[in-house]
Image 1 (cartoon, rainbow, N blue to C red):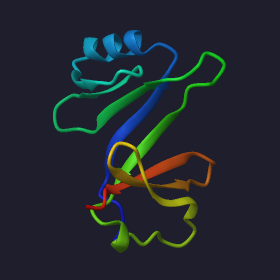
Image 2: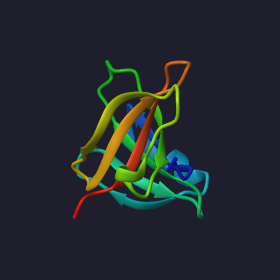
Image 3: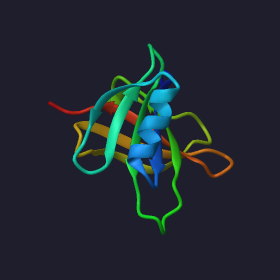
Length: 114
């Protein structure tokens, strides 16, 4: 099985409040905010945005999150560099990381184990 498309865009920012207001101004609705300067926004049926604040001395990253419905059935094709295998996240999913030919990291997200 391969991926099922883009699940989310993970954005890092230096100011969670300003970033959330910016995307809300573009029509995104806040799904939830955390108590540690991050949150999730949606706009229709497209990929959700998850935005997390990082320290000022760290360059903000943008990562694409690809969906798989079953990590056990996920079989990356030839030439796919798996940077890190599936691991549990603190928010209930399982994630792996792959690198594209230009060095960009992509997150592959599967449902958490029950």
